[in-house]
Each structure stands twice: as structure tokens, then as C-alpha cells.
Image (cartoon, rainbow, N blue to C red; front, side, top):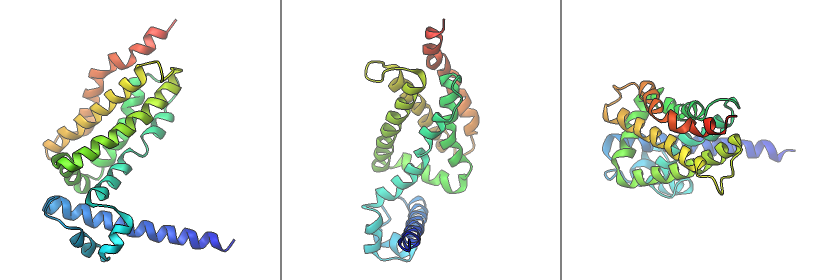
Length: 207
């Protein structure tokens, strides 16, 4: 019984250190540029040693990937929580908006990071890698919601990939405009284009 509080305290401390490293790294990388910042500088800004940095992250890229993980972590949960009778386009629009709104709602901090990710080839590659993982998770949830076999039906993967293409496009437009374009309007416009195709499967199965 005494071990549980100690473990909780250790986990809390680890999270605090990871958060401080992430905050320091993202601030430096967004301000100075990805290639200009060293791990030593990130560690110094966070007030830890380089050795401590490598206990939490394998590379500079991994610090940014942590930010990306937070963007995508709730996507499947959001989709799973949508009303059962909701059309796929509406459910996916809300799912995508969850992560976009998380950025737009903290634009002062998030916009420079999004611009850094989209403008740095190594980080963009990691971002696209993450999106592949999100697509698979969303496809599995879509298949379950619609009663489709993901091993034989193309729709779940195609629909999830289409929704994430909209997600990426909205972030790109928001980034390119330096935050002046409204991401909510962009999201609505994107899904207005995609809705007929996303909802076709529902109409085809309707009696």
C-alpha cells in the first residue's frame, strides 16, 4: 500500500520534467529553427543535463513528436463518443476539429510549432508517420460503428484517410496564413466538400 503513492509521485515528477523539456524545446526550435538548436541548448533552457534529456527523448524530433502525440491522442475517443446515428462526415468533422481546435485555442504557442513541423522535412516526415497511425485507429473505429469488415471493405481506411487529409490541409492553410484564416471556417469548408463521398456508404445501406 505504501508503494502506490511513491509511484504516483515519481510519475508526476517525470511528467513535469518531460513537460518542461517539451516547453523549452518547442520555444527554442520555433524561435531559432530546427537545425540551429542543439540538445545541449534545450537541456540548458529546461535546467537539466543532456543526460537527463536523453532519458526522456531519443532526439530533438522526438520532443516535437510528443506534441504531435497530444494532438492525435483523443481522436479515436472522440469518434467513439459520437452519436451512433450520426453521419460519418459529421462524426469525422467533430473528430478532426478536436485536434485543430486544440491548436487554434492556443495559437500563440501552437502556431509557431505547427509552422516548424510543416516547414522542416524531418519533422514533417514524423508528422505524416503519426497520421498513418491515426488513420488506422480511426478506420478501426469507423468499421466498428458501421458494421463493416475492415479486412474486406475499403471504406474505413479511405474515409479515415480523407478526414486526415482535411485535417492536414486545414493546418497547412492556417499555418500559411500566419493564423489569420479561421480554422473553424476552413474545417467546415473542407467537410462540406467531402461529405457527399463520406456519407455515400450510409445512403447505399439504407433500406
